[in-house]
Image 1 (spheres, helix red, strand yellow):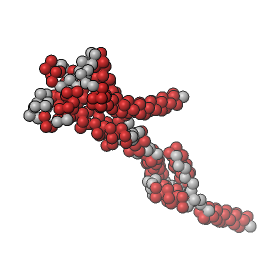
Image 2 (cartoon, one colour):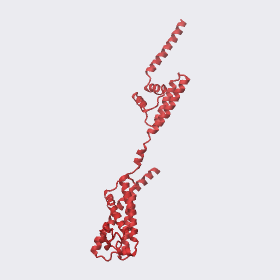
Image 3 (cartoon, helix red, strand yellow):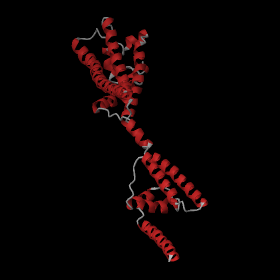
Image 4 (cartoon, rainbow, N blue to C red):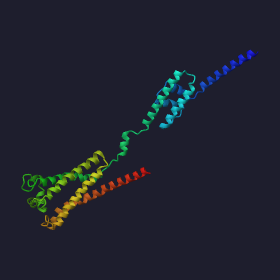
Length: 302
């Protein structure tokens, strides 16, 4: 009777263990299921496809790189606890696969959370849109400035009576109004005419550069270049008028008031009014950019 009870008890305990094993196998969570299939058994690389299968099985994933790494570590810990019945060699293989998965998951998470360089460059770059009237001024005045400077450099051939005067025929009237462009200044060897024409060339280079930066590159440097260009134009024109005022109208005093106003004041006045307006507009743009940069620096310092 005692022998029967002992054998019956042993069989009952064995049956209990087998029943518990079957029930635990059937009740295994999706996490344990995919741990065995995805990581422990096959050493599968953590990928978007693997994540999709985990989500389909109801396994919650965390989006941050730290959370994903912790999830993988949890999987490895569960795997090691579940695989205690495996041999030493199989456990070593499983551990190496899991370690490789951790490194791969961490690297892929870091890469996935880094914004692409193109988006950084495009966001850090502030595109500048030139006002249409400023661009129109530069486009219209660039050929005029080159034409005026070439007249001064080509004297006397560009003057009335010269073989190239046909290119600058409107100057036949203006050279009689303003002696800086006429024969008296040329005969005296006055260098102011060609000196201001040389500055006109430099100014025109800046004008072209502004149009390129504003309309081709959309560069934030464009307002600075345009500001410098119109500042040169305005300063040079004011200097031109001041020289005439302080020399007692030595180059224009021979004209009557009507001729002086329409052929000298009006043309030169345009080179004061428009550059002043452009100077103000681009100056406002530059000041706004500086204020924004100052606020950003203050926030960064805090």
